[in-house]
Length: 264
DNA sequence: CTGGGGACGGGGCCC
DNA sequence: AGGGCCCCGTCCCCA
Image 1: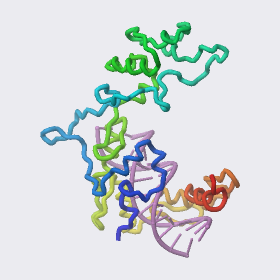
Image 2: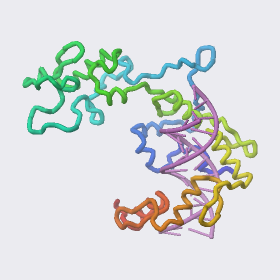
Image 3: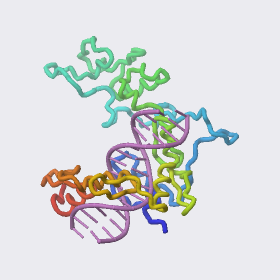
Image 4: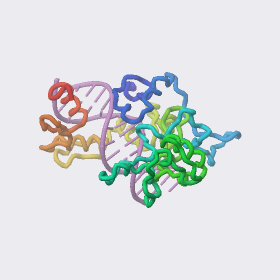
């Protein structure tokens, strides 16, 4: 009988908050329908797999909302924190990105030049918006390397909010929707062959991973690893308050919530 | 309540 | 490019 946790939790609201740490797309999950359609790679008109699949480019200006501004708190446009000469009040670094030999301009209106066309903008945000008009040249528009990396092509899953920066990663993820590896014994489906092999061990009873200390055997290497922690005096996960150690993160979490530092 | 085991998911790396 | 594998992690159950 399948256990409830065998069903992907993607579609439930039972899972605690951990996933919210993963991305700001958390709220999307609330809109995922219960009968979630299977994902599939984009296909050509004739139905064949689109080997030339063109990802959605997150920097594509045509797709940007009108209110888009790169000057968001998470991605400041140009004032990059770093080693600065704090003795100079004007050394904010804003105007010197990419042209550090230029002296700072005293006039704020002159501080936001487009390095590509020379246009002067009134604010960093305005400059960033303007620079997007050059984005066919990508990094040439004055974006620094980190920003350029962050705005790489996003390969988006067709049926969930996740996106990846490579088609291979996206394909791997999509397997978690299509679950192509099916157990011939019980019919349960898995995203990857080795997951299926691990599952098959639950039918065969095979336990290839043995503990060197007590000879206890496990079907899953991760479970052996967790078990090995039980032989250790000092365990991997330590409470920051009482310094007690635990073999598993979940045990530490329980500890901090229930007994040691409930407010933590 | 706590600790540990079982089963599984997913990203990243290597071949 | 794709598969195999490793590692880390989660969730549930049970003693």
